[in-house]
Length: 141
Figure 1: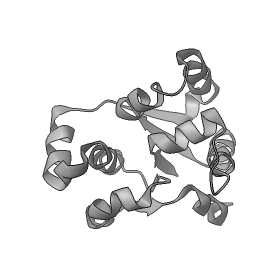
Figure 2: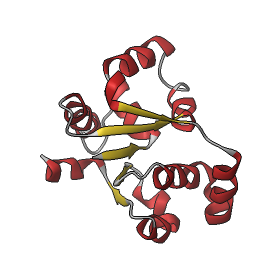
Figure 3: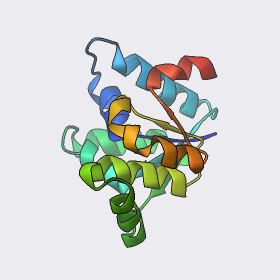
């Protein structure tokens, strides 16, 4: 199953972040299922730029190497940016995540910030992409 992970999920895992919930544990299960070839991750250069604001380049490179055969890298196109602007110019970064998840055919877009994607929920549904909090990973175990 191909899943798209929002940058906050990647940062939670790589920085061992938690808050009101153990975010890093949810993200960790996504990574474990990826290592076990139960999931394949779609990671965009857009997400990578956001991750590298918080994570050292060496840590990021090591993460990608660990999952080398199980990651589908995505490059943002001008068409992606145009579509993102058409569905959510008030929240362009997250609109772009939604467009990219749909373009690669991800079954699920995992994000911790579901409220940020409310405006794109119908778009994602129409494209066959489920929007889920990372804690929903327990339903896939």
